[in-house]
Length: 343
Image 1 (cartoon, helix red, strand yellow):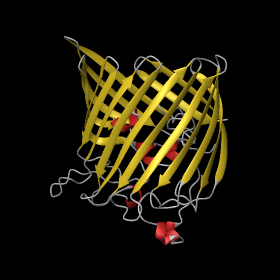
Image 2: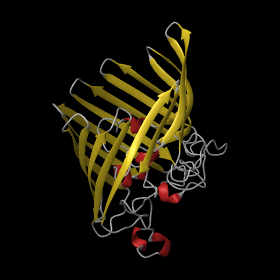
Image 3: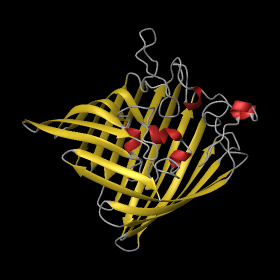
C-alpha cells in the first residue's frame, strides 16, 4: 500500500479539550498526531504530536494559544483551495503549504461578525532535524543570534453568506544548520509569502481563486515567484461531489514554470466514510522545479544553473498520476481520528 502524500486528507489522531473557567473564559488544548497508515510511522519529522500541540485561553475576544501551532497563512487556504493538503494539491508545487506549522509559537485568532483576524510569532519555527520540508532543523532561540529562525504571520478574512475574501502573510528567517533545500540558512535572510484568495457559492457549486507571491532572499538567481490557482466544486447529487482545479507556478526571470491540473470525485457512503478517485497532471517548461513525482538532479549537478534555493532543488518531467482511495473519520469524548488509505 504505497503512501501517496496522504490522499484527500492526511491521516491523523488527536485529542482536544475545553474547561469552563467562568465569566466566558475557557481553557483549551489540542494534541494532534500525523501518521502513515501503511507503515504506522510518524509524520512531521517524527514528532509524536507533529500536527498540533498547544494550550490556550479563549473567550468572546478570540483565543490565544502557545505551543506548536499553525501559521495564519495556513488558514487562508481553507475556503479558497478545495483540494486541500492531500495528494495533487498545490502543496505539490510549494511544499511549505503542507508544512505551515511552527514550534515555540504564540498565536491569536478572533472572529467578529463576518471578520476573522489572526497573528502569530515564533521564537524558533522548527526544532526537528529528521529531514524533509516538515523537519528543517531551524530551532532558533540562539543566545548569540536573536533573529535566527524567527517567524511571524498574520491574516484578515471576511465571510458573507455566499462569498468571501482572505489575505495572509508569512515570513521567516534562516539560521545556522537549517536545511538549505527548504529556505534560508542565515538569519539575515528571509523567505516571505503573501496570499490573497476569494470564493463564491452558486446553488450546488462553489468557485475559488487565489494568488500567492513569494520572495526568497536566499535564492540569488530567481528569488521571486507567483503561484496562481483557480477551481470549482459541484455537487451533482447528495452523495457525489466533483472538484477540479488548475494551478500555475511562475518563477520570475526564469522559463522554469509548472502547471498542475487536478480532477477529483468523492462519493459519500455515510456521514463519516467516503470513497474517492483523483487524477492529477503536471507540465513543466524546461524542467520546471516541482511536480507530483520528484527526482533530485542537483545532487548530481546535472543542471547546476538551477541548483540554488528551493525554487530549483527539485527537477522532474511531465507526469500524470491517479489514485483510488477511501477515508473514514470518527470522534468520541474529545478524541478524533481520520484515516485515509489506498483501495
